[in-house]
Length: 129
Image 1 (cartoon, rainbow, N blue to C red):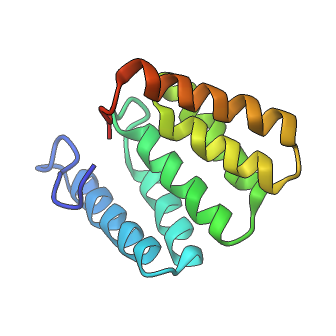
Image 2: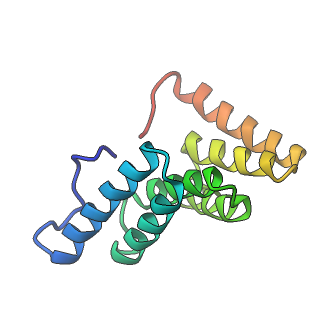
């Protein structure tokens, strides 16, 4: 989801705030401030509805922020949540593989990487997000 996309229901203050906070988190992550990013993604997760269609992206991005902050167990937890929410999304499996590798769980990392690769191969060069 790009920073210009909005959460559904922008008339609602909570949705507007969630969108604003996600944009802050995205900016923090892009500028290399992992701590601010995972804090803001957490705030965003507390604001969006549980059935929000892009929830997997927020978990995936927070997983990346945790990984950059060297909080690999938390990165893995969020990557697994992203995989659960969108099992056909290769990026979630990539995040899981990266977290597992950082935790030196190489066999599991290889399996997650294979899943990510197979999802990309199935879809060609298309990218869901």
